[in-house]
Image 1 (cartoon, rainbow, N blue to C red):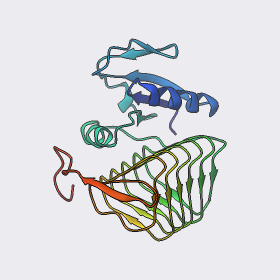
Image 2 (cartoon, rainbow, N blue to C red):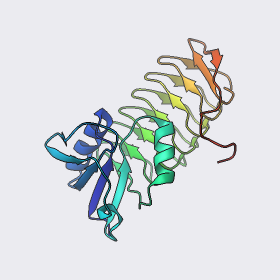
Image 3 (cartoon, one colour):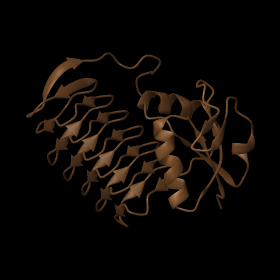
Image 4 (cartoon, helix red, strand yellow):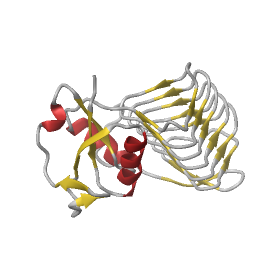
Length: 213
C-alpha cells in the first residue's frame, strides 16, 4: 500500500498537486527539484538533490512538471513507482482506465471507456468523453472539451478552452492553441490555432526523442 507520495518539481503545477494530495488526505513525503532555486513550496521543504527515500516499498512519485517533454525525460530517468492522483470532485467513469503518474484535477469529467495513458495531466474542469484515447505525456488544459472517440497522440498539448469534435485523431507532440475548435485530423508535430482549427506551422520532432520511443 502506498502511504508516502513524493513530488519531482517545485513550480506552479506542483502547488496544485500538493493541494490535491491534501484534499485527498494523502501525505506529501518530500519534494525534489534539482534544477530550481526554491527551498520551500507552500510550507513544504524542497530538496535540491535526489535521495533514495522515494524508492521505499511504501512510496511513489508524481512528476509535478507541466512540460510534456520534460515529464517524458524524467520518467525515463527516475527509477520510481508512480502514483495516480484524482481530485475527489472529478466525475470519473468506473469503466475508464487511467495510467500511472497521471493527475486528474478538480471538476474534470472522464466518461465511459476512455483510456488515459501514463504521466498525463487532465487539468481543471476539462471534459474527456466516451471512448477517447489519450497517449502518454498528454496535457489537456483547463476547460478543454474532447467529444467521443477522439484520439490524442503522445506528448500533445491541448490548450485552455479548446474543443475537439467527435472522432478526430490528433497526432503526437502536436499543440492545439487556446480556444481552438478542431473539426478535422491533426498531423504529428502540428501547431493548430483558430476556429476552425488551421495549421499555423509544423514543428520538428522534439530534440532527444527517438522515433518509436
